[in-house]
Image (cartoon, rainbow, N blue to C red; front, side, top):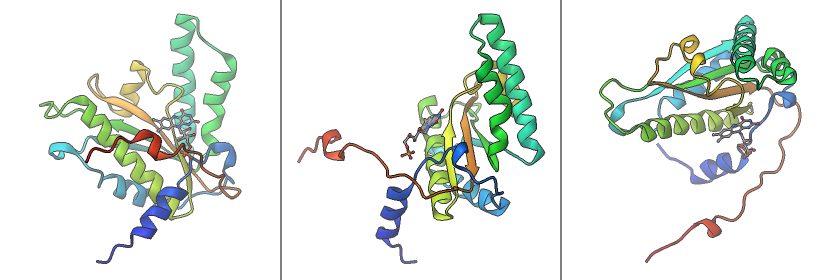
Length: 195
Ligand SMILES: Cc1cc2nc3c(=O)[nH]c(=O)nc-3n(C[C@H](O)[C@H](O)[C@H](O)COP(=O)(O)O)c2cc1C
């Protein structure tokens, strides 16, 4: 095995979030989504708890997700008075702009072997692997944590129990155009180096 660091650097620097409006509407091959999930499965995990779980929506499944999330949004927000029609319509229609949507979940192990923050951290590492794999295949993707992500009532639909968490929705699609420049402040501003 010979690993080439330049390739890793290039992949990381060229990773971008690509949003639904930027997708062409063409389907992404399921095999690429499977590869994203295979690579997600190799994220670091303290005590090998492997807390990531995925529910993949594609084809008619996107409509199933859309109907569920819009109706749950309505049900919950009408009760607390925060309902907004525009948000409801987005939840009902936007999923169909993606080729696949992967609901990314954290399954808490029964023994609570490691602190919850570490399980959530491991799932976010898995998400970065998904992002980088998409980059490698020229596929667009991004993590969304809007909508019903943090609704307790959403968990059952994704096979989760009270101790588990819905982390977000990873959207996948073919980018229509070239990707925008990235923006980051220099890392030197964020590092204290002790010799
Ligand atoms: C934890 C997390 C949650 C995010 N949630 C959303 C979201 O709900 N909606 C959204 O448009 N982008 C979301 N993003 C993507 C960010 O908008 C994106 O990473 C940021 O704009 C930087 O762009 P880049 O990923 O191309 O570097 C999320 C990213 C992370 C890491």
